[in-house]
Length: 511
Image 1: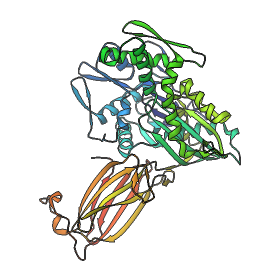
Image 2: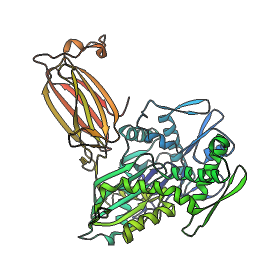
Image 3: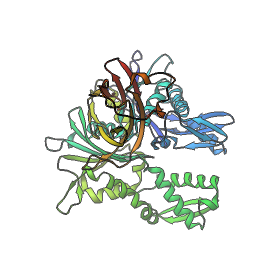
Image 4: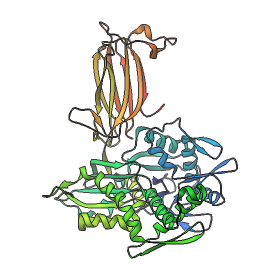
């Protein structure tokens, strides 16, 4: 039995379609099971919210409300993958406008209550903390990291740390397949296809120390997209489409398509799903033909993590022990088929694809296991600045993609200079890559802005800094910029006038 005096330690994988949890139990990491409202035992809580009258409900209760026609939102975690979402963003449900942060907090509060009262580890007193290692997509924006962490904390969880999901899967691989790692094959390529996102990471494993050597991903590709592809194929076979079906019937078709997709086995030949009440059948091969480009897109995304062979085709490097396939979206037989055709016998699929990350997180939460990971920033941070009296704008790289982060520590980068203008405009962006001229490329997203009055006379509350013209000055103050990356991968900027100690501090990714 677990020591009742110590807090319960869990690995929590808040997923796009389902949320899976594993518990630390004397060197074992069983998946926590739950009893849904139909008295079925399942290994997840559905990630769904619904409006029941004027009240928000979550999980199993939201599933029931959705079946009765209540306004609801599935895969709401996918909203966080939109780089424009911040802590002030709202979502629309029926006639209600709801704060995204409040929705996340409500769901995670429901998850905590369900763990305590209706799970395989139930009867946990309210006085006992739920300590958790929490997963986050490797390519999460700063705002997504903040919203996730803040929602867990507001919901009463004691967050030990946030770990990138592929890194957690690397823990599970090492725990389960340690025999494949040796002096020559020292790393794992984790292929994590979830419900809403795809991430891949090269993870070096030396004993219990793991180090992320590189990450790539797609923020808007996941199992949900396969559901839509299948629903479209079925609708076309029935001579209709989403517009003709209407919102309610189309959503019902997507749900039925998801269930049919999850029931597929490698030997399945046909898929039958009701469309507008009429059974419709298509060959599995038709669905796979339409879905193959999506799987190929994931392989293309992880191309920088591969090693070109003699013909220039990317393959697993000689130091890679295996390609580890995890995530709920990877349960589709087509995924393993394409990966094995490309990479051969070194493809390993987790026996718990949908819960692999949760198990890995629980391993990471176990102090006896002593697993640690050196993460990397998956996105760089840079700033656009005014130059030469505002006559042009330059870009400075502050933190490069793949900057290494030590376990549990903060990283601080400082720069010091004499200000040459009366005012400084700092427009911060996150980016995924840059070209030879150090110009940011890939998905570029603003993540914060600071207007700093170098001129002391402009530091009054009645001054509208945005209306001030940028002009060059002589003998400006000595300025220090500090960029602080915390243990969760979130960045805070601090700009200080060292002559007067006047400081502006802003966490990036928040309004």
